[in-house]
Image (cartoon, rainbow, N blue to C red; front, side):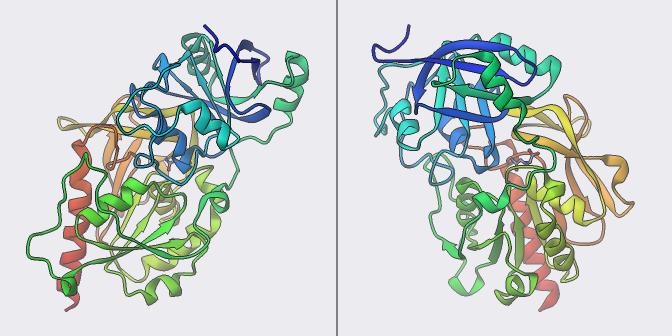
Length: 383
Ligand SMILES: NC(=O)CC[C@H](N)C(=O)O
């Protein structure tokens, strides 16, 4: 059932398939890479995660908007997607924290959405054919016309989207928890003992910063183009390479910054795009997956020990490109792609998945603890 004041909308994929539905959010036309997310909850976190910049997300969960939108669950200061696709939109959101409805929120930020779509068929299509560009529009309702716009859009492969989402200036992060997580600072830690982490912002999710702060770290977030010498001026105990959008191989500045930082022998920890950048800076190569991994129940591990993880990525490191100094610590157990690595001699490790997932399983929170321990050990070794 459409809203009473709704307008028709059209979705067209680059292979020519078209779907008709109704508009929610802003009017207009938007083109991006269409990807599916299988999480049963967390639409606000998905829509505001900067890693989705340039993408239109279709949700396999059948109804969006039930709990509205609130200020605490934002992963950045705005929705970052090019558009949203839903089977249905809740007309009467209800939650004690809700301050706005999802359609009003998207409208305010000029992001279009389309609902009334057979999202099962759409997901199966992407699963079979692969992720591809698509467009949603309330103004171009002729599929052939929208298709020509879609076909002239750039491919995600080769796109560096980091400059669009990184912070323009450095800042210190202070918030420690989103309320669903434990505060994990080591008891008795005084300000003088606090570990300093410099986070290279490639499109960072706020919950990662909250988790680092919850473990007692002082977190300084710096722009993606910060030179390595500037980063080292903070005298960090560890460097964090964040998640982020686009093709990792195109983020050449962050790759060369990381290469230079490797020489400092400081602990380095990367998540998702940060993991890929770390692998690239160590001489590895990345490739694009057919449709990526996006959801809250992706199994990762090696053989017997499995973590259920939250994931959101299109690219992965090619295991054959990684040198003998790298150990693969986790595989995605659905398709056995690389999900984690560590350097055999340097205090460096990374994961392709999201240990900070919120909502999502907390199985992997120990990764933050490992980073804190690594920084403590390396501080003790230097002193
Ligand atoms: N969440 C992320 O950091 C995504 C990394 C990268 N943009 C990819 O799609 O693979």
